[in-house]
Image (cartoon, rainbow, N blue to C red):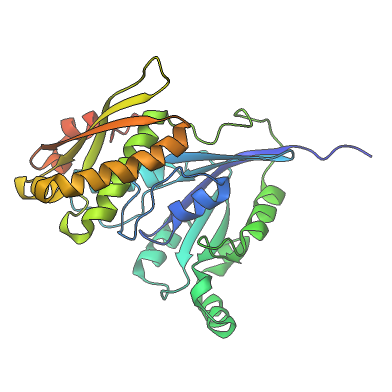
Amino acid sequence: MSEQAFKSGFVAIIGRPNVGKSTLMNRLVGEKIAIMSDKAQTTRNRIQAIYTDENAQIIFIDTPGIHKPKNELDDYMDQTAYTALEDVDMVMMMVSATDPIGRGDLFIMDKIKNIATDKVLVANKIDGLSDQELAEYLASIPQKEQFSAILPLSALNGSGVEALFETLIATLPEGPQYYPEDQISDHPEYFVVSEMIREQVLQLTREEVPHSIAVTVDSMQKDEHDKVHIYANIIVERKSQKGIVIGKGGRVIKQIGVAARKEIEHLLGSKTYLELFVKVEKNWRNNKARLKEYGYDEKSNY
């Protein structure tokens, strides 16, 4: 009896903003790679997460949620999502089972209709639905014929994730192991660190500071005691936003630092000293030079 052939491939995750793409990807690889937020358009770059077991390696490419561009940053995000569909082995479109199929979903379905790559549809957030509500939702999905499978699941609690893995591994081609088995992302550590800081800014400032922030890491070095010293900048567009991020008496920036440091220490496995600075850069989302400086460059994925 011959051994089972090793399967491998690249799977692009695409969908409207806030359908749970990053949450699912973190669930799939078992580690925090993409930041999670209940605000739309959290993910700005293509983020590759790597799942490996004895039978397969799947490289997941999380993409920004496709939406109508309002500035240069939005345009970059949409182009990043579309570029992710090139040269992948599968496309996994996500929808939210708690929302009716809308114009945004239909727009994406039309965009991927003529892609020859195998496609599956994932209906996320089923944990909030009864069996009857889920059945009615699945029956309402249009353009079913373009998908080889329609898979309901909950990225939040993991229900249905095993069935998704089985479908992906069965569909992917035989191939090599592209990355070492203990590697879970192709991004450098400083990119993931900057994302963890940005997540805490989004969570702790809520609606007061919209998605007009960026985070850059100036330096990241270990000292002789293996403690990692990180110096990072939080970029905002207006002075009023700087005041919100810092907070009265520095309260908010301190909370951001404490929460981010906890996540970073888990990632790095080392004690961390984190110092944050807040800088104002007016209208940076429409400045191509600034976008490139902050890592939003079509020639780079981080």
